[in-house]
Length: 445
Image 1: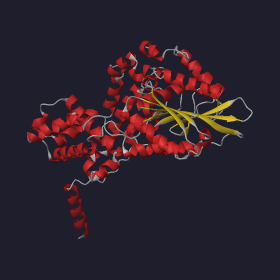
Image 2: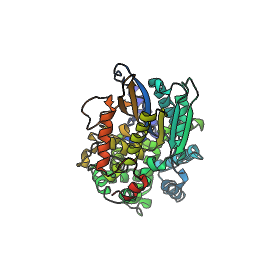
Image 3: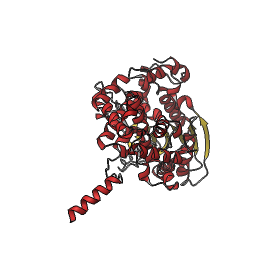
Image 4: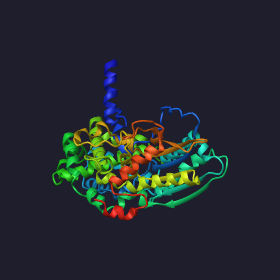
């Protein structure tokens, strides 16, 4: 009797399409929600106090960047449904897509409530960890890009940072697309990104992960055979890519989904995949980030070189602080395409290792560790009264970073050593402090 009841419950769950699988979130890559660091920081050398911060961060968790009803899968699902060509699972997907449209309408390109919370908490931790920096009417330079989500991210971050201020702050805000969206300013990078040099490496991973079979398996569950007869592999890849994009964005929209009174299971796009399929698609997505935004397959690839102006800006603004002491912190808000190549150029261990064997790209580089949502890089400067020397701690996502090329001092490196290392790196790239960044980006190959 007990066995019969369990079997009946199993059949009922299957009929209702209840999915009990828990595949974790490792597949999310750069769509991974930000996690506050758990490790304690190394004690500061005796007598030293934090005095200045140079910071760049990615925008927070966000909504989609384009309307749901402009995607290929939206149009295809409506067309197939009107022709009676959707399976039961296909109709279920169509309803999920319509549900997502309700959530996303009017909010595209903006950060979500999750994103605001991420940034506010990072700002709050910055104050609590380095409150000395912000004593006595602090002066802050805030720079953003043309995208509204960076302005929203800056505002959320500042709401957390300023909550602990004892005095009012003087804040200067400006746009700096040149240094923060350097990838838009380089014709050579655009040619690389739009070309097929890196695509051959992604194809290797796609083949290793059997992506064509996955695409075929998923589309066969959504559309009837007669509809699929007229479609090709590129079509299937586009369909699965759109579903994948929806599956990864939902994690950032918990509050918005709740506000629309939609049950989370009615937006569970991961239910169309097995855990192995999610892992395979995640790896294929991550290798593209590795090749287009990360260290890639050879040292000093164009996708890393173009971060040189931002490195020069960090050095120059640090020098300015040491010379004048006017600005307490430079706070920049940008994109994953900013953080990942900058981390590689800085030589941050875990973010800078090239992989000539593309099948091993993720052995030392994980998109979720380098450039999750709200990812950030901080240079925190320390000084001791009576000393002219500065120490600097470099953090990736608020975690103390080892720097390739610096053998001693971790995590409180001597600024003189850090500056020498990075100046030498710029020289190798034929870039000098004070050079015209726009001209460099237009000419670099």
